[in-house]
Image 1 (cartoon, rainbow, N blue to C red):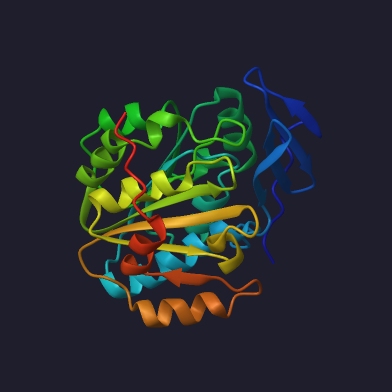
Image 2 (cartoon, helix red, strand yellow):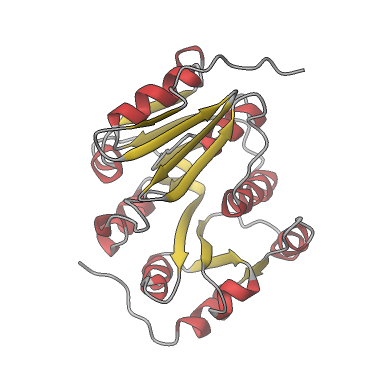
Length: 265
């Protein structure tokens, strides 16, 4: 039975940057502007609550199977409560990860609660994802963009400039995983078009209702390089999830975009 981590955060606190942090027992929840952004149960880190993070996890599992790489390297632009980094740390002990979060108080709370000083392969850093990635020559198999201010991704992390930087920091076998919010006001198609403009193989995972625009939700956009996973099997795995999702392949994505243009500045 997993050991329950001691609670180090207050039951409810707000950082100077407006991030709300709530803890109950071993659970940590992070919200901003009333929008829940990250949840982790530190006693069960492999259990992922948010659907879009489950989709990213399935994508990594299938990619890892195709690549047969023993020591994966991952970069996370946006960390929140570190739900995905901690899940991957528990599932892939040999994996090296860097997670970047702009809120220093959130980093302090999460780092302490998760005992990251005892996890040398998972480094949580304070900073802007673009600056940290640009300032390092390190390359990765997986780069995740899951950074939000309120309900929006900072614009500089949606542009062709940023996406080209990501492409330059991927290893020969790699994937860029992007969380894109989809609703009637978010420029989701332009964000997807930016990824497709730079990655010849771009797929999207989401609920078909979100894809059609019938409800708001998340798109997990994946830009691929090198060996590709078995997309037929990936689609089958996604359809078997408790809340089934679908894999939309490059040709379907291109048709869905309908002429949407990349974000150049």
